[in-house]
Structure formats: C-alpha cells, structure tokens
Image 1 (cartoon, helix red, strand yellow):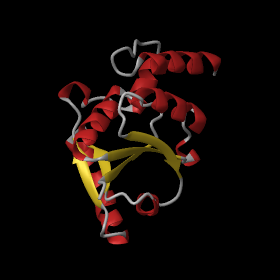
Image 2 (cartoon, helix red, strand yellow):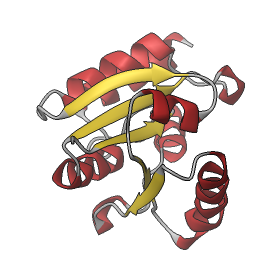
Image 3 (cartoon, helix red, strand yellow):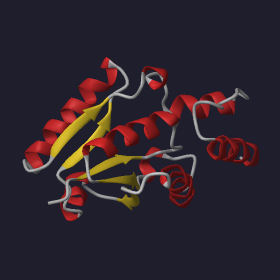
Length: 161
C-alpha cells in the first residue's frame, strides 16, 4: 500500500523553507501532495492560480510530489485523497502550540490520520511567507529565501499594487 502524505498550506508565496520540508517528506512517503488552501479569509497576496503556478514550478524536480488545492476541512480532504498523514513544518517553539492544537483536533475528527511535524534546515527556521512579503514590500532583497521566479513575482505583484 502506498504511503501518501498531504502538506497543506496557503503557500503565499512558497518559500525555500516549504521546499525543504517537502524534500524531507519525500524521503518518508511514497507520495506527497502539496495542497494549497483556498482560504480568502486570510487575504492572500497571490491568487490561488498564481500560488499554484509558483508551487508547480518549485515541485517539478520531485517525481513523487503532486500539487492540488482544497477548501473545507483538511481531514476530509486528506481522507478523500487516501492519505495517512498530514505534514506540518515547525520553525520554532512558538509554532508548536498552535500546530499541536490543530493536530489534536484533526485526530479527534479522524483518528486514522496522523500529523507529522518536520523541522526545516536551520537556515530556514526564521522564514515565513509573511516576513518575506514584508521584506519585499519594503524593498529588501528576498533572494535566497524563495526561488528566483517567486522573487520576481513578488516584485511584480507589489509594484502593480
């Protein structure tokens, strides 16, 4: 039986930290689904289509990673995809409390689905999409934090705003 995991997120935009977590997950699972959350309540900078395009380019190097999007309850999506695990990245202790609560709630909703916490490389523990957008908004250089095409898209999006 294939072991499938879902790595959900807004990926607004996808960062090198996200990609590091994806790479780690590919070593543990036969298939990893990067699932972009369709959640307009978060007021994403990039449209769902733009986030999908950036993520698709970023994950094409892995044969066992696929892209999808979802709305609604994550555990329902994970069960529908016949996945056994949810991948969550932990950067710092401050992430843990929220992620732990979500993992426990997801377990309550569907005890068959496990949550796996993966830490990115130390180089990426301080990265977040929110911080990267703020650096770009203030004219800072985001090279090294995101793939080059994401940096270009950020500059263009913020210039056009």
